[in-house]
Length: 227
Image (cartoon, rainbow, N blue to C red; front, side, top):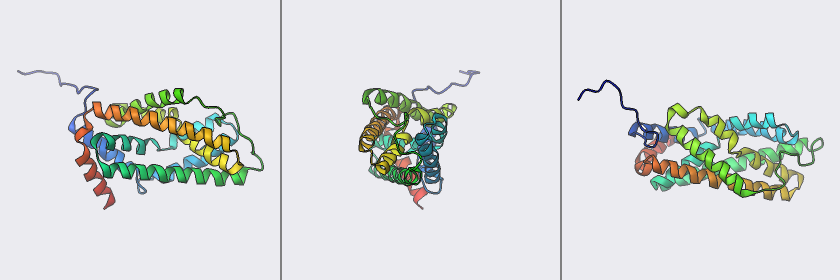
């Protein structure tokens, strides 16, 4: 029967095209050639001084640049599809990212430590992990949907700010440089809380949207990038 109106796809299901494009986007954005590590390095150079001078506007500006959402979503996708190669690749990117940020932040803090040698209000000295897990969980839902549903893509910048992944990693570097190991411990707890909440949320979203069989598309995208 002829129907003059085009049927819209449901928000809670992803077409084959949407799944393929989401997989390719996540895989391609976590590479050296995509500028991922360059943007992360520049974001660290912005966020670290912002934390040292206690300027929230500067910190937010750096957080918008930081692409740390990508490997976390990629890991969640690989967990849903059961793709071991994708999991290892995402974990590798995350570890390299953390080392890069901590090292850059520590060196920069050492250079600036004569002027700024004490923790500021933006550096977490007391942590309540539960609330951060909840916040990052909600952000993970938004981030996963935004990568699949292109009409929600503008939400990625908001997710990057809300989930607060970069500041605690930078604070770890600051704490190591200043010898403030309580700061390192608290920031590590905050980082893990954000990671767990976001990864759990993205896993659920990708599972609901039907990415269980996305492993083949992910392997193809990874092989294409590696070539």
